[in-house]
Length: 74
Image 1 (cartoon, one colour):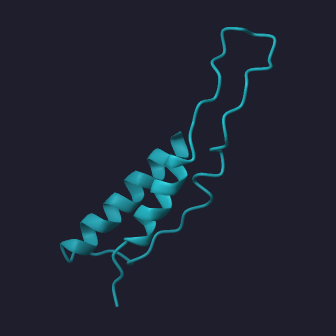
Image 2 (tube, rainbow, N blue to C red):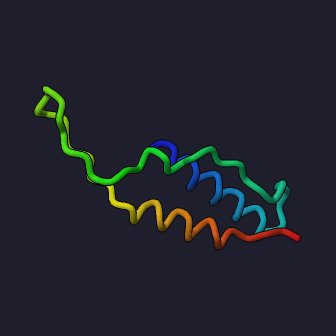
């Protein structure tokens, strides 16, 4: 979850700067922020208190849709 939040903050800051003509390089480098998101996995550990992983592919789809709309500075 941390990588997705970091990516959201970083891209939001870049958009803020670009849209207001503030200093920014105009691009962001992200290293696989959604690679940890997988299909639902059943809890097979010995610890029954650990929750099941319930993250849908919607997060990944929305992330890439948002990245396609990233403003380009030409």
